[in-house]
Image (cartoon, rainbow, N blue to C red; front, side):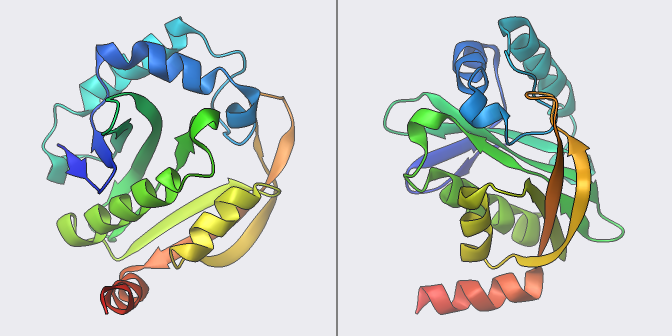
Length: 191
């Protein structure tokens, strides 16, 4: 499955992404905001992640509990991050997931662009009604991105997650976006 935006391609991970993946996540500026990514991040870990994603990508999109996308920059063909839609529950119409972008590409709007396309995919193609997300307190770039895309803060899980990169228990801010809110926001942006 391949999703496209003006500047990006969201597509399945492949073996050729190993170097970009390892380089992007082997940076504490990135991994300190992710719960499950260790620091340092090795090529062996990147290889394992790609293998894991390849197994899941063999299922039809409508039957998957998880969609893991590499974020490829159209202008260079390089992978600059990853975005996921996890714990897809078709019966309930819900999912969650996250995003990371390599530090060299921070502040350019790529995360917002990829996350917006992920929302479109979830609501239009999968027919979901709600997407939940979380980010560590203090990650102001993530907070701004979620607000810009219409996510509403629902609460904070105090010391909710242990960050593998720095070993600290961190507060997780929980946010969600409903399909109805997404539709209203999308129709306003098209005017």
